[in-house]
Image (tube, rainbow, N blue to C red):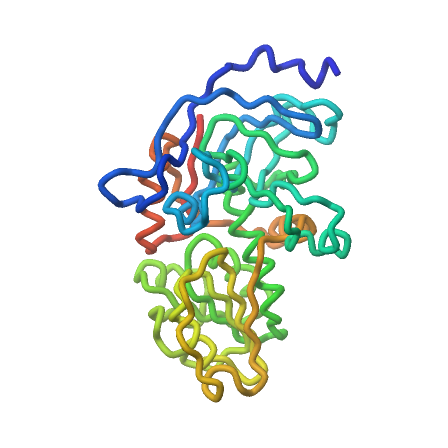
Length: 349
């Protein structure tokens, strides 16, 4: 018990953090994000307290900030791609040692007793909680996490590089698995930001032919630099029929074109947590020939462990643009513009 609380007395009582005030456009006249002082959280039973070293900027943070996702906690602190140092453990908490570097992802907690949890599908748990939505996240100097939902970070990754792996990487990996890509097949990636550029590396390293579809010219060029066979506009027809596709862009009216570009028996996986309405589909053009349309909901902890092991083995390296902690709102505005080379990451002192 002495070791658990050894460093709490040495910690500050207040920390700097961002919080969502009234959700709204990040590029509007009044920012929905406010830079404030908050109490440093106290780890509860089974929880670890972490000093944040880096926090990736995810498109889901934008959905929380702008109100695309309904408010789950008033004045929540966003952020769920968190790398930090363990500074204290709550009661009955002993998985991580003080000073150990760990990662905190989107999935914060599941009940463990519902039929989804008990059948290995905890990502569908109806009682699940999420970092930066149901509970304060990593746009802050300190954050807590239930010890069973954190990850050890492979030593080869520095904290800024590791941050996007914790959501962009893990969700991309689950979407990659859900897309049922045949060996040596052709994969379309729609939207080419933080998640897609990591998924592209996984696919290319395994001999899959990748075709990129995105609105940003810089993002298109980045896709080609990573080894994509082609880079096209977001609504362009594919130069070849695709065996599988993953959609990262939250734009529903792109779906009919994506289905039309699939080969017979192909699969389109929708990887985002939010998507605008899908326009009308034509059965013969979009669905016939046993085409499959599936969504991706969060991830399981097994997905996270498998992906981090694979990223370590394949030496997957996210491209990152660091931002000072004080410029989180500026980073989110950049993410909204959509022409991102890789992922943005807040770097804390």
